[in-house]
Length: 100
Image (cartoon, rainbow, N blue to C red; front, top):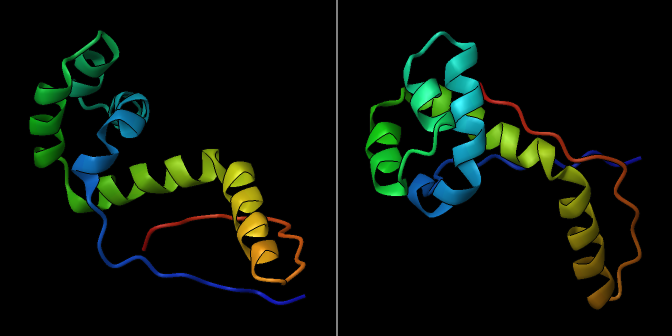
């Protein structure tokens, strides 16, 4: 087995807004933040972007980790497909993200 780690140092959160919205509501609600309820009740994306700007960096990172982890099967398949296109046959057993 080979363990491959990637470290993301920059993430464009605004470009991920549509994918992050469902996680933002849950994450903020679970942390007792009243903005979580607003997001769950259909807040517009422009307002959500303003809310995201107020969220601490550590919570933004946790949101992206949730997004990655919930899509790990799809990401693994895409990575396998990309490797196969380059003549490398691999099977990815897991993709997992965590924030520091």
